[in-house]
Amino acid sequence: MLAENSDLAKAMDELGLPLVVKIPDGSFSRGVHKVNSPEEFKRVVEELFEETDLLLAQKFMPTEFDWRVGVLSGEPLFVCQYRMARGHWQTVKHRADGSSREGGFRTFELDQAPAELLDVAGRAAKPIGEGFYGVDIKQTDHGFVVMEVNDNPNLEHGIEDAVGKDEIWIRLLKWFIERFEQ
Picture 1 (cartoon, rainbow, N blue to C red):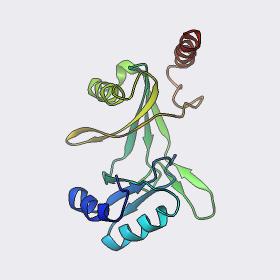
Picture 2: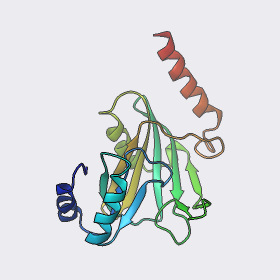
Picture 3: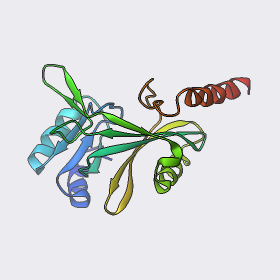
Picture 4: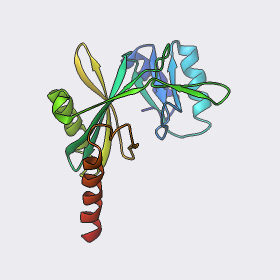
């Protein structure tokens, strides 16, 4: 976490360069920047601190895709891979003209997803609560690494529900109904 300029040196020392700096409430690759030098890091941080009081810094881990595991009340709901946009390091490449290019997706049956992935996602969401979370995970040569737990994950028809279809929506609706009835 970066909250003031003294955190910059600590982040670079602990994470190394390049690293990723992002706003805590970004989405779909918005507000997320890769920095390659101390000068670029300082410039990006100064720009972002104009909009927010808190930034997050992460080690840059290049991968061909990111995993997203939807976790509902401690149990996996869906598993999806989001591929990086062609020639880019993120799943969405935002252009200066406002257009964007996405890398595509692949959705998995829960029993076809790596068991360790599901375990890591469940353990990452558990301390936060029994809600609906989207756990973003990188798969590296050293195993699965949790990048973030989203407390307001997207669930788009034809993407995250491409495999589970109606069962995903039924489980989610039942979860909401149970909470309303309590």
